[in-house]
Length: 364
Image 1 (cartoon, one colour):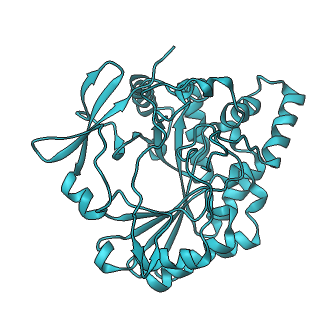
Image 2 (image 1 turned 30 degrees about the vertical axis):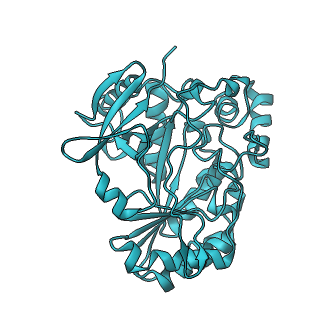
């Protein structure tokens, strides 16, 4: 989840992943599950140069553009009533090729800017109703000292915030970073629950070092949940998904979302059709081969935010576009974020709820 360099999303593979890739190729060959899981997600391919007119540069626009307490507010987004997003960094241990924020500018917020973000989250004039903060990026585990400062600042200046969620892939990309300094950052604070949102997309990513890192985090009282991305050719088959979610269950990681891969520039080779995803989620939920406690929600990230595929969500089809029904009204969204502008892909129904056109993927 880091920015592009010179207009091209830079390939970055952490030393840990590089060592695992080289070891897997040497011992089992390039077709091994570990080699496939790493190569598909992190190594550049010429297919990224196939840009389609329907693909977008950003997954949504939700920044809060104001000066707060006399200073520009940076790294803050808001789409929903209860949650504010803070992005303290766009640096990651490795670059996922399917990254949501691959086209974001590279930045790191200063300590002063982070404290300003925390004070904004606690300001009742702007954020009445906010109960949670999602700290993402980039990867906040890459900057444990500033992450610690931000969490402490939220405790001090935003008592309305009861839950802090942190988005990180460090346990699977660079598990050695789950060290004493990071665990101090994740220590319990009175009145605050800390959660970790991670992405594990293939069972081969549960390296012994990664499992140990997750175990350390779980034993510290941090709740861990997963948001898997459905990736064509990597995990878009029932057997792989069953093994993935069964492994999560055994480790103690909650299955939250199975995300349909979004229509970002250069990602078409990763994207299945929504119908294929719906078929997989139906089978996943009805085979009896998986515990009911580890079944994810199949969800799309649209220009309006997340939409889960329940009955009646798909209202219409136009070529490879789907019209999806939301529960968000235009007035509510503007109240939560006055700087938000309705994208061209959005329509407002007679019930005042918004619908959004979403570009589907294509199965080979």
